[in-house]
Image 1 (cartoon, rainbow, N blue to C red):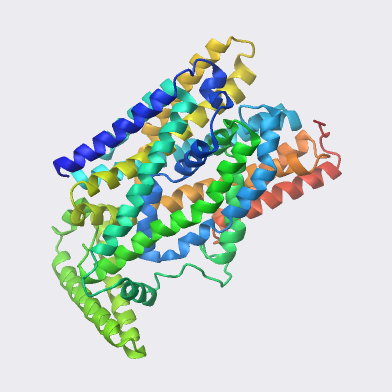
Image 2: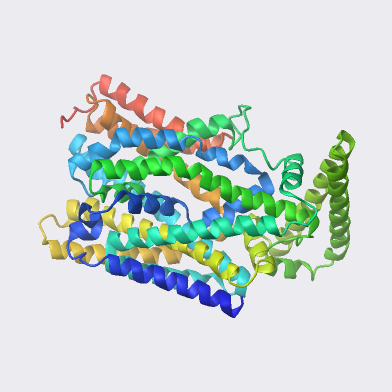
Amino acid sequence: MRTLDWWVLGSSLLLIILYGLWKSRGSGSVNQYLLAGKTMPWYAMALSIMATQASAITFISTSGQAYVDGMRFVQFYFGLPLAMIIISATAVPLFHRANVYTAYEYLERRFDAKTRALVSLIFLIQRGLAVGVALYAPAIVLTVILGWPDQWTTIIMGTLVVAYTTYGGIKAVTWTDFQQMLVMFLGLFLSLAMAWRLLPSDVGLTDALHLAGAAGRLNAVVTSFDWNDRYNLWTGLLGGMFLALAYFGCDQSQVQRYLTGKSIAQSRLSLLFNAVAKIPMQFFILSVGVLVFVFYTFEKPPMVFHEVEMANITRTGEYTGLASRYDAAFENRRTAARRYLSSRDEASLAGYRTAQAEFETTHRAGIRLVEKTSGSGFNDTNYIFLSFVMKYLPAGVVGLILAAIFAAAMSTISAEINSLATVTVIDVYRRHVRRDASDGHYLAVSRLATVFWGVYAVVTAGYGRSLGSLIEAVNMLGSFFYGGLLGVFVLAFAFRRVGGTAAFVAVLIGEAVIFTLHYSTGIAFLWYNVIGCVVVVCAGLLLSAAGVGRAVRT
């Protein structure tokens, strides 16, 4: 990191935080602190919703995912626009008219207290597990850049986020998200432009796309159906839609964003903006990874992108022979790529693909050597993009891209600890511990709960290092619970005859089925959202038909 990079990084983050704190003035009541007094405009909510989901994991891991697996991850979002339309038509008006702080308050009005408590607990478990992963993502940044222990990074980042979130509440979160998303957009476009510019002078964009396609990196749409394939058209449209319905319609970290809207129309606009913008944004991020892949076809990448682990394996007896094989495989691939670009015939295409397969084999051998040396599992995906940024991008640009990554991390973490604090206070403390305290008391407890969840995130962040690709890990974690959450809200919205006990038991059945599928089958995790929802709805209807529970009319 050069002086200019530090200046750009520090000033960007400082301005974002100061702007958020300035805009959060007047958060002196529980309603202002948790819902911004329902005064937020659609554009602020829209970028806050996008920023909450577009965490540092999106920048760090999605680009690396494209490098190793191509564009097919974009299919994960194909169902999102449909989900946003459905939520805009159903959940948004229902939650607004119910005048609730959390989505789970609505469940008590519709069902009963135990169903609300169960779903609130599921949210706290799921989001509590995910917040540590989100905080660990920026720890990778400074680990690669400075060699700092990742614990230092999580403490610094956690302290910074807790400070402005505790002070300003949802207003500070939303307005800092707004600024952070603008920085993220700028960092995204700069990354794409620089990756394109750094390609060899005789390799144009068309050439780059031919090479990426020949290596299987332009697989944006996979039409074949396979239960065990995580990313194909059907998994994305169905599994992705159900995941998006659950995340944006039932997860408090997202519901709370549009509950702050001035009106139902403003909240709907914020979601519909994401329906239009989310897939192009993910496509751009994946395109960065694809162009980095083509760049490294001509510029030799490190055998292992994690600098510390690379240094460790160079001291082993096996490294010298493996390095010779790796160098030869790289030169063979580069030569084959040049030959393919010059002739574009079937023979040169086959030669390039063979050379690519040989190179990937030697890279995997390097990963296995790291695992053998460290005695634990290792995944290099999360370090690819950062290694490229630090080594090849100019001063100032590096600082801005890192500011975008840190802004993404801060936006997600602040939103998550804010929503966790809201559910803790509204659905647990005020409902079951102290029901008739003053507004000032609940405001103070809300701030204490924010601090608690911030500390919790710092403590649990270290578990992220063993989860492999973070973008997959965080979505898999959500899929364990989202099917059950979505199912109970479908029962609440669409099946008025189902009562509280039937809904409560149905959620437990749905979660049991999801975890059974995970541990006993190879079904791709996106299908957990579909199967879990269907199981909960069917179980609720069957239990209701059998006379379990009594429907509560609202």
